[in-house]
Image (cartoon, one colour):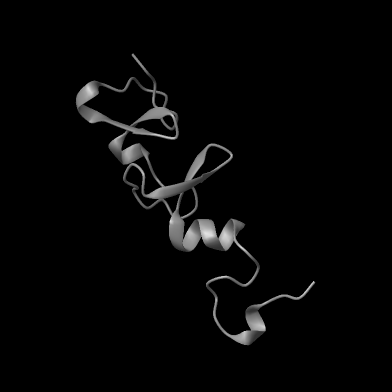
Amino acid sequence: MPKCPRCQKEVYFAERVSSLGKDWHRPCLKCEKCSKTLSSGSHAQHDGKPYCNKPCYSALFGPGGFGHGGTESHTYE
């Protein structure tokens, strides 16, 4: 029986959601930053951890200033 990567408990077929090459409990597949419950295939991953596409993944790992608005939010390097 596969184990859920978040809670480490066994994942039964009826409660299984497959994502990132692993089997999860539906409520355990959450964004690492905002804890929003995610559905399979509608999120991004970084270092094997799930993130919602917007705004969390974009804000954490996207280009500087993304999603914050205003000209003052862009950083020039």
